[in-house]
Image (tube, rainbow, N blue to C red; front, side):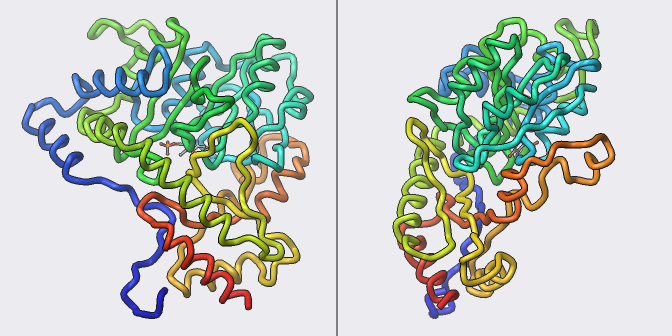
Length: 371
Ligand SMILES: *Cc1c(COP(=O)(O)O)cnc(C)c1O
């Protein structure tokens, strides 16, 4: 990128793992206990402490955390669950997995998250829960969504799979209620594959522990239908190390994002992401909008970036309601803000392995590409 021919590709995501993670998995391998055990229990306690939630139940992925959370709150056939159409498919699929009916409301274009006023209009008589996604690392409007949920007697589940450490009015997301996190390698912290459900509801905690392990509390006694959604101790051991580093990773993401926003100022048709008042954005993705007055179309721009050694991606090019899986299920509302976002967004690299100098080089490359 610098012309020296020696600069590495600027990758969108690159998990940072070091000797401490390697030592941790070696410790587990030598212990002879690789499935769910003491490391998982330790990780749960440490994660709950870190995010301020009373309980944490580690599971095999963010998807299984969402499925577990819905089941733990008793949601199933005959219920509908409202969510955003502008998210990774797992959010909505968890509703289908629970046997419930998904409903969608449009997003607020300022934060790409569920618009509370539109969510209110989309509630139906059988609606039991809302899944709010904190997309790209910025919290949804939790104030309004929490009031809406409590006014209408709904359960609010936060999909925090992209927002470990994000804050709303000073509080960590998921501080109250139930939240789900993913530890996939592209996320703000990783366990390889893995997820966790946090909750302040003792009963939901107890049910989730059963659901992740074939509905049993006592070995070989099965009270309800459950699954094998357990986290391995290998994954948990990695997670315990990553948890000590995630704050620093997020600080670096924020520092890179701030620098990139500064360096991209004044480019026509390129709208940089905004951190809304009272929120702490952890930049799982740094998603710009490519507006019609940008000199190139999004596809050409992406190709030019790639030719300059810069990875980019679209999160997400197709809204949930326009996915083939959902297309045949019903007549969905138009959701124009979500459709516009899907047509305009482009994620640029700000991951913690990159430096502020990389951000300057990235901005210079963009200016060169469009000149
Ligand atoms: C990654 C992600 C998930 C699913 O997590 P997995 O660990 O990949 O199953 C769910 N929702 C959102 C918003 C995500 O980004």
